[in-house]
Length: 476
Figure (cartoon, rainbow, N blue to C red):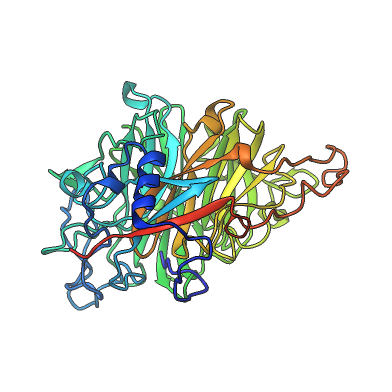
């Protein structure tokens, strides 16, 4: 997606930055124990294909069995990474409430994604548990536009999947494997069509119902201004082999404002619903809740739900209206206001509440809390500030975080930056957040104090999180 933040500026040394390079590396070593990304020699992590991409398909290092289909020779190359400006990014060294654990993808990652999967650059990192599919409990991680070989073909794939059984996240997240289309080349799960009117196909949410995996994905027509893009449709895809192969589910498409006709395997569109092009799933008490936002980064979230067993039956979905649930999507009311970008929702055992993570209009990673999936949702706590990492986007909670699985305090989440164009694993200590007191269930928003509704200060201003250093990722 078009990843550049909505506000751009030169990145000066932050007012909280202090200490020498030696002190920074010592802090990194002590805080990021086992994070080889920091202590090993660093190399380029940004995708190194030229822009615009050479050729007719933006990179064709994909076989017909799994990769994206190239555009017809008469068509111009579709944009692969319009946010790629030749920079290679940096690793932020943070102390305090939120810290960097490691770089999960790219040349500097302990996961060795270049040799194992043909990945030099990728983004998102949408996480969900697989329900024990394939006889193994794993977390699946769906990623967006992915780049590979820097010496030849860009190997552009629109989406890939990692699988991980790593439960010890304090020293990083090891990747078990990925569906492959060739040795050392991760497969594109849902290939783009290559037709004029479709630039790429991006996953937005994943969930397992039993041992069947589901992805919500969007067909991107065009990139617009930073933070804006146009979608043709959003649809569901299904996998019954632990995420190795995926089949679009007929009848699940919600059309956007793009003009591309639906692929034949999707059948007729269920609805025209531009407000529901991007998703976040929460599975809770027999339901799959789907939080819905428009394409881009400028919309608020509405909420639908469906009995988990009926996830493919779009007619069974009902929408939150503030006064209850209704089948009329036009009656849906906003549950998360403001600009909600790349959202994830979880239940936190530590807080005994639901938590929402997303990037807001100020390009901060924020967290909000609620007692029920529909809210009311609290004010915002900033987990990672724009002032510390202006190129950030996306924040997807790891379902095996201690703060989710138990009463542990640590919340782990994936994060992308558009200059490094790779995925980081981050950690926030939720015990350091100011407590919030919700109102009664009957008042829904009324509280004895304003702790529930207020936005807390930016930790970059208060010093609760300090940027110690930025370690550049050198050019190749």
